[in-house]
Amino acid sequence: MIRLARFRRGATAIEFALVSSAFFFMLFGIMDWGWLFFRRSQFMDAVLDGTRRAVTRSQTDATLPPIEAAITYTEANLTAYGIDPASTTINANYEGTSPSEVLIVTAWMPYNPLIGLWPTPTTINAQMSMYLEIQD
Image (tube, rainbow, N blue to C red; front, side, top):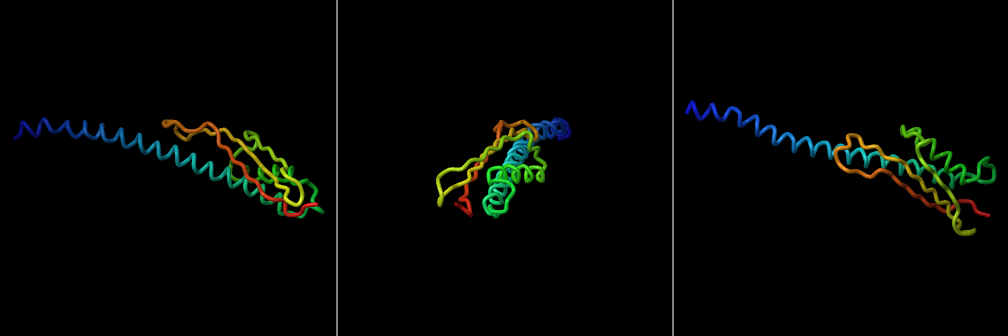
């Protein structure tokens, strides 16, 4: 019995090494993908809010046209989320004619993974479209 117990002493360390490597691999994958979904959610929310604020403001007394306002508001939202607006590409344009004119805001951002162990997308994209509230 003593001889058998002596051989089992190292088995626990080997089992721990095998199980812990798989555990940490999965844990880091969950962290990478969780961070991706978190950043994507923040990015899409910034674009959505920027678009919404641009189309719902009064266009008669506004100093900026809706396209420029959407870009300005989106950049302000990105800054509030800790994302550098200089690293993003934001485009806005109109589609359709009055009374069904739509403002479309499209944005891209490079994505840097938190850990980089698992393959993740290299960019995050968002596109929002809303009808202009006040149209000519």
